Length: 112
Image 1 (cartoon, rainbow, N blue to C red):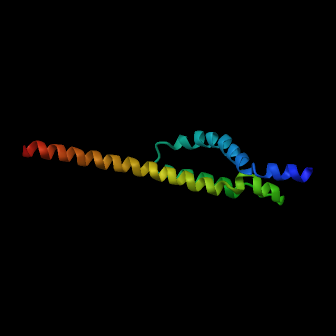
Image 2 (image 1 turned 120 degrees about the horizontal axis):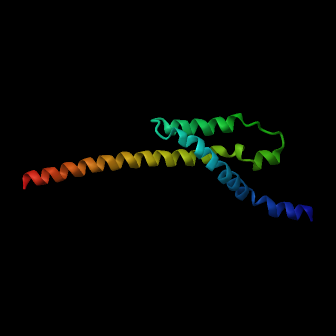
């Protein structure tokens, strides 16, 4: 009976990991958003998560290594960094499109 319960609960590890992440991330965002005006925001985010995952002490207990957030944080870091890069690229692209649009409007106005 204990083995059946263990096999049912074992498949909930990803949900438990996500819950840990969603409890921790708002706190991390509060700290990281202090650097909102910094040009190196992406670097600050990445370093913060990397340091968090590196310096958290790993346990010798296999179940803790499997279930705890600090052993899986690198997967979330990849997603987080991808989102930040996408956000920065979107801002740059939007600014470039606005400049091109402005030039096009002025050119068509002058030529007409």
